[in-house]
Amino acid sequence: MLLLAKGAELNPTLLTRLHDRGVRDLIVDEDFLAAISKPDAVPVRDDAGPREPVPVAARRRLPPDALIHEITRPAGPFTPERERAARARRDALDAGLSNLFAGVDALVAGDAAAGAAVARGRGGRTLSRRIDGQGLRTLSVQSVADLCADFDLFTIVGLARPVPHAAAGEEDAGEQAAREKHAGAGERGEPNEAPSLRPRTFARVREHAVRTAHLALTIGAVAGLRRWELEQLAMGCLVHDAGMLRVDPTLWNGPHRLDRAAFAAVAEHPRHTLELLRGAVGVPAGARAVAVQIHERADGSGYPFRLRDGRVHRLARLAAVADAYCGMTADRPYRPALSSHDAVRVLAADAVRGRFDPAAVRAFLEAVGVFPPGTEVALSDGRCGRVIAADRNRPAGPRVELWDPFENRFTGEILDLAARTADVACVLGWSDRARVVSAGKPLSRRAPRA
Image (cartoon, rainbow, N blue to C red; front, side, top):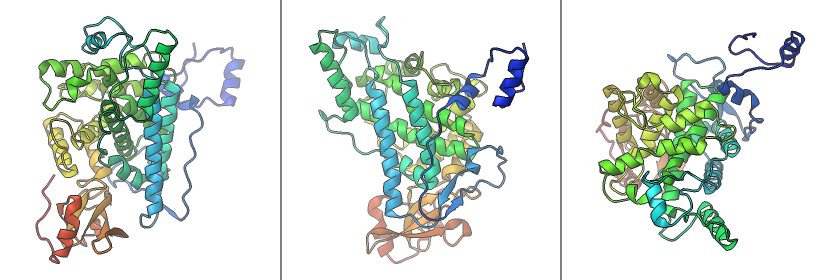
C-alpha cells in the first residue's frame, strides 16, 4: 500500500509514475472525488462592462484557493437588465428543483389512509423513489455559477420574500408532472401510488430550499469556502427539506404551533431525506451531512440526532444559520414573517446563547450585515432606499441604492454608509417610502442595535 499526501494532484504524470511502480488501484476520499470528477463548471456569464472584486473582511484570513478570490461583480449601479437576469437565473433554479422534486414520490402506493400512516411513521413501507443525484449536482454547479455572475444581486434575489402560494386547486409544473405520472400509472393498470402533494406544500418546500441555498452560498463564499465545498453546500441545502414530502402536510400546515406529537413527526424528516439520498449517485458525503444535520444546534437542542457543535459538519453549521434566517423571514400559517432586521437580531442572540456556531453567525453578518440586502431603510438625512450589499468591516454601514418617490423607482445612485455620509434611521415597509421622504425632515431615530 502506498499513501499519498492529502491534496496530492492526480495528474497524468503522477498516474504514469504510479503505474510504473505497480499501483493499479487508487482509493480517494469521497469529498475530493466529487471535486475532481465533477463535470465542467458552467461558465460564468460575462456581463458587459467593467467588473470589480468582491471585498472581504480585513481581519479574515481566507485560503488562497477560496472561490471569493475569483469572484467579481459588475461595477456601477444596478440596472433593470441586471435585475431581470438575476431573477431569471433564480427562476431557472426554482424550475430545475421543481422537476427534481416531481420525480420524488412523497408517499408509497396505497390509499390515503395508508399513506397518512406512513407519513406519521406507523407504516412499514419505504419510499418508492430516490433523488436524482446527477440532476441535483447540475443544479448545484449552476447555483455557484450564478453566484459568480452577479454576487450582490444573487444575494438580493435569493433573500426576496416568497410570493403567496397558489390558490387551492392550482398546480405548478412540478405538481402537474407528478399528478400526470400517477394518473398514467393507473391507466396502464400499474399499482397507483398516493396522489401528489397539495401545491401549497410542494411550493413551500421548494421556495424555502432555493432561498436557503442562495443565502448559504453567500455565507459560504464570504467564509472562504472553495468551489467544490460550495457546490456540496448547495446540494445539501436544495434537498434538506425533501423529507418533508413524506410528512403528513396537515401536521405542519395548520394555523397553530406544533404540539409535541406533531413536532416529533416533523423532526423525523431529515431521516426521510437521508433515505431519499441513499443510493443517489454523485451526492458526496459533505452534501449528505448538510441535508441531514442542517437542523442540529451547537448546544445539542436540534434534531434529529441532537448533535453538539463538535460533531456537526462545518458546512452544516453554515447551512443551519441560513436555514434559520430564511425560516424566520417567511410567513407561516401560525405566524407572520419576521422583518429581516429582527431575524438578524434573533440569530445574534441565539449565537450568544450557544445555539449556533459563532463563526457561522459571524460569516453571516459579514455576508449580509445588520441590514440584509433587499431591506428597505430610511436614512438619517430623510432619504430612503434599499440595501444592496453589506460592508464586510462595518456591518451597520451597508451600501444603499436610493429611491425616488416622485418617479416611483430606484435611481441607481449608490450611497456607501460605511463612509458615514448618513446612518440608517429605521427599517421600512414598501408602503413607507413615500411617506418618509415626503415628510422632508431628516430622521434622528437610530436603528435598534442587533
